[in-house]
Image (cartoon, rainbow, N blue to C red; front, top):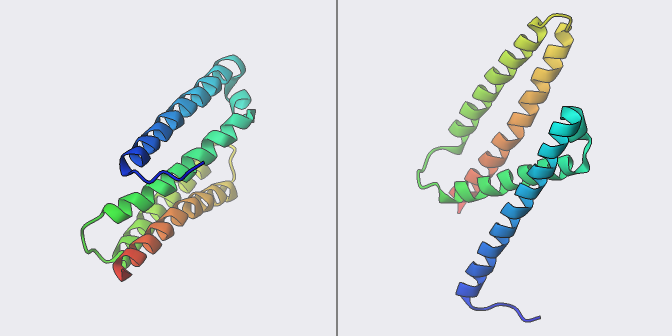
Length: 139
């Protein structure tokens, strides 16, 4: 198989891959929706396609972050953006942890644990975008 050298054909190939990705995602969502209706939320999340869908969504989000940072034109400080992002993430985590600890029958440690998990899961993309912005500023 020969490498494609024509830019128009490369672009058409990328568009075809995008359409295939959309069809695949719609198919996965259809199967998961059927499982949701027939087996409930537990049946849907037990399906291995659930993990494929979640991993695909995460990878797609990270790849989109890379493109959006490259598309930014403003010369804002990456450090300032990181501090703002981490502050908002911390506030959201504190609110979620507090609301969970207020629910009846739930110990405060559960709220702290879930708030910490939400913070870590929110901080990872913040640091990733910071690293991308820092790399773009250095270039």
